Image (cartoon, rainbow, N blue to C red; front, side, top):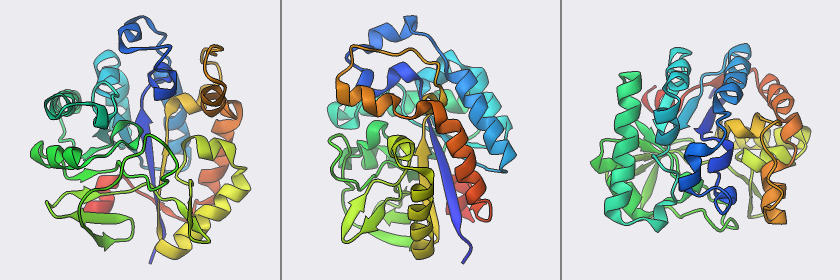
Length: 280
C-alpha cells in the first residue's frame, strides 16, 4: 500500500489563538494586525515546491476579512474546509450558537469558492457529541476534530461507535467520516506527533522518525499546522503566561525551513487533500 500524508492547515491569524485569548478577545480582532496573507503565501509556495496538495480549514472570520487568500488557496488546487466562524471552543457553546457558527462559516466559504465545503475542524480539537450531530445536519461529509493526545486540556473525545473504513479514516453511526490527527504510540502511551507546536519543539530528524513509524504501521499520516507558526515577525506579547508564551513562540523563526526539510524527506509519499482521500 502506498504511503499517504495529509497536510492540513488551520487558517487563523496569530491573535486568534486560544492561548492569546485573554489579550485578544473577539472585540479586539477588528483592530488587530492581520498577517495571515503573507504567511499563508509562504506556505503555498512551499507546497508548490514539493507538489503538495493540502486541506485548509478556514476560519469564517478570516474569509470575511481576507476573501482573496481563500480564492488563492482554492485556485492553487488545495481543498477549502471549515474551521467555524469565530474560533470558539465547541464545548462552550449552546447547540443553537454552535449550529449558527458552523452554518455561517460554511455558507461564507461556499459563496467565496463557489464550491461545496465537505469538511470541518473544531477549534482546538474541541469535538463533542453535539458537534458530530450538527455537522451531519449541515451536510458535511467529514470531520477532522479528534486528537487522541489526552493530556491536552482543551481536546475533546470522540463520541459513539466508529468503524475503521481504511487507515486514518473512521465512519460513524450517522454516516459522518472522521479523520483524526495521527499521533505516535510508544510503549502503550500516546505521544503528540500530529504537528503544531509539537512539530516546532521536536528536532526534525526525531520527528521524521516518528512519522516513519506511523507510516510503516498505518500507511497514512495526518499533519496539522497554522500559518502564524511560520511568521517570525508577528508581534510578541510579553504579558502572556510563561507556558503560553513558550508554546506560541517556540522555534517559530526556523519553522519554515524545518517544514521544507520535512516535506523533502517524505517526497516519496503521496500528498492528498482530505476529501480526495475519502473519495478515492
